[in-house]
Length: 382
Image (cartoon, rainbow, N blue to C red; front, top):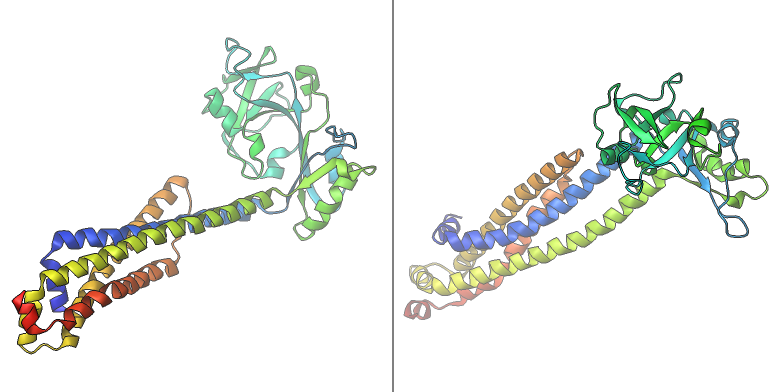
């Protein structure tokens, strides 16, 4: 061990560059695993908080291939079911854009849609406001902005004077919603109460999207029967989905992408191992005189082999330790910026260090064996 450490200390620059190759590969693998695990933990926390019993209903297509419509009393129909705990809906108001002021050109709508809310949408989606509040029943007209819509309009904090221009009239902004993970389509919406929206904005009264909180023990049953409840004649004209399934699919996609990145990290680790092997080969060639002296003084072949093998292992282990620390730091910083919990599987850190030991051993076997096979006279002569 002393000889191995001494051998590394005599060539610090070369050791640093070789260890850096190992460190980059290990850091890449640790960061990929850590960031993926942190993302999955954040998603699991979101699903635990919001639940997996939310169902979403949208119109399908009729026999002619045209977009069908949902019944005007869709919310009431869903609430009558004993396997549905809560229901709400939104109806798209066409021909009404949302602007920050009445001086904005009509073409600059910013992609913000206007939707009329039926039922207690905030409760069903388990959403919350980041500024202001939800609708006050006696204060019309009024609007609640989705997170993306508010950002597009440049509205942050809401006060009594905050207004937007909709359909040729000023409308008070009641609040701004936090992002809705299970209903991201509403993040770019301006929401108005359905009561009075017909007179104020020309709302036709039909919902274009329904949301239902099913009994957690009967989610599958409710999902299979909601279409027939809303359209008994042709249930195929109604599409029912589970938003949490989309998040789970996203998680599966991220897992596949993680496997790809792990492969890239493995290639970087392989390159680092080749660098270690190259360093050890050059080290053996440069230190033939030292090998000859040690052999002449009585060192056996296995002593020479062990010396260089220990140097290779220490070099790889040092790079691996730095890589694990760097990978953990990258994961912690990235997770903190995203608001995720920091999750670094213990097997990833332990596996990273084990991989470096294996790489160090494999990379050092040939150079160590080459050094051990040198005859004392041959080594001293060169």
